[in-house]
Length: 69
Image (cartoon, rainbow, N blue to C red; front, side):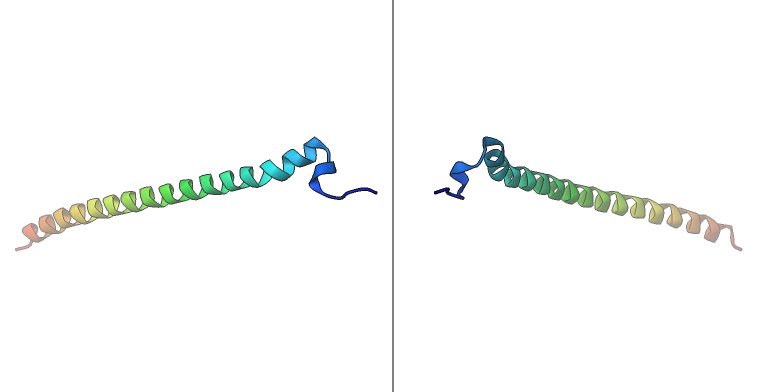
């Protein structure tokens, strides 16, 4: 009589069954951490660039306003 459990499978299959979910989870968590880090950095850059644009526009408008008679 043959058993169909994990105990009678080859070692390669056992390793895949136990470690594949761990590897997949590690890849997913690394991707999530990378994504969240990138989102945070993009927000910081966007706010910084927006602030610079507003500052430069303000200077330009003041210059234009001072030239009017």
